[in-house]
Length: 68
Image 1: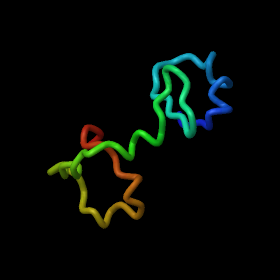
Image 2 (image 1 turned 135 degrees about the vertical axis):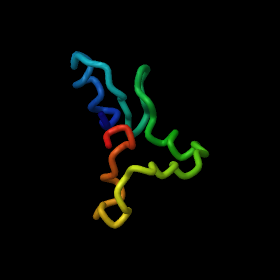
Image 3 (image 1 turned 180 degrees about the vertical axis):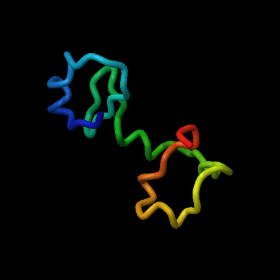
Image 4 (image 1 turned 30 degrees about the vertical axis):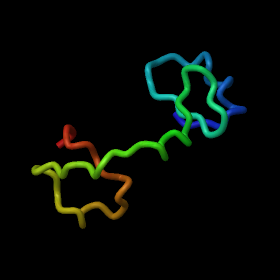
């Protein structure tokens, strides 16, 4: 889930295990969105069983290889 810093308290009682990302000053147990800029990961490997790149009109909609 992604929420503004002021809205994180609204989700304190939501059950479940999921990633909590905060835009702004992140409280404890939340990851700060701005920290993503410090990551130095290279490009993701192409899954050999995935369809051609043109099959995805929006790059951000790609599925993880484990879903094929």
